[in-house]
Length: 500
Image (cartoon, rainbow, N blue to C red; front, side):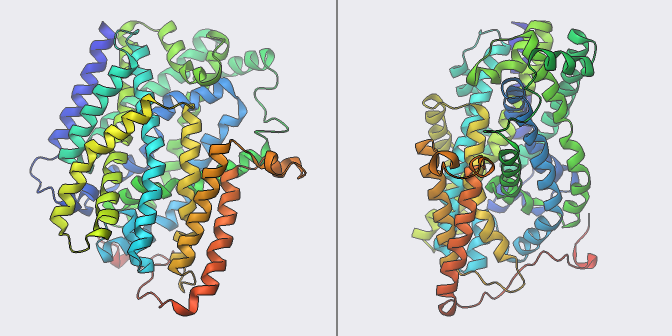
């Protein structure tokens, strides 16, 4: 009962922070979705860098270290590369968004390619990708609360209660609620990860080095990449796919609009890769659990961190771990719900009713939050797949937006709206066919060298996407008018950046 009480205390604290964040603000669409473009370095850092500390941290990263070993290191690599990319990418996106008062990711594509239809396509791709990501958070929430409470509250009820709280404060406070809750979430999660990652190897093996020696002795192949399957080429292609896709998630993309100025991104890019290193301690927990709580197979490997925690610590500490896990679901879940609702209202609904006022769009976006929450609940209770598999599927989808985005930032835009749309459709269709059929590059083309067969299929979709985009643009370029404005990756003079 102690653990359950601690978990509910965290839930009430998150709900209180989320609701209080609205105080004193006129919550129009710009305030609700991008914080009035007034967030400084700390809030933007927590919304973007803190995105890595989700239920994925508690379950997926430790679960892959437990079940797959060395391939889990891709998780450590991809976000670090994405943060380096953000030094050039996000200032360019922010400048253009501020100049044109953009709200959603889809708005960016609408303005760049002068095509509301392309904006609707981007919105739909983003929402379809965000549903499995939100399902991931809700699944993780249910697992964390149920195990941490020793089964006193079922996974289903934990998911329902968490979703109700999530929906309530997102609808009322928007991104302000997410930002303030992320402060509590990151403070708690960092403390928990460091304690677990340092204490558990020392408690059971005498130190991290001794832990790795014991794991290597018991499972000699686990700590190296295999020669086929999740091999070196799989690793490199998955890191590439995830790195370029990191800011293609609509909630990450539009969260960048909330910054006060572009210098915020350059400051954060210096420290965010260091922040990523904390994930090493999550891997230490997963590797320790291999020998302490053996026998977890398949998707149950995601339970490794919680199993070893409940076997090692008293109830009150387990409750704190469960509360931290709850927060890791609520913060990214709130951003996913809010961004999905904004994209559907502003870029899909408005396509059918172009003269709808901004005020009406804002109200509709808030009303769509509970509807999307119900859809996500349905898929949460009626779907399978492990935590990492869900995330990789979403990444493969949103990454298909990257070629068109990169082309739009060129000083002289050579990609047409038809080319951008064709590339996205081809890429998404490839991901969908491969995912539904369970095919791999190796099964589709068995005669290729092993290194090629092991490539992540999302990268193959990205190549086909780029080929279609360039080819269709070449055919349609003469009929497409040149865009009126562009935003390049070249930084503006500091005098135009605003104040911090």
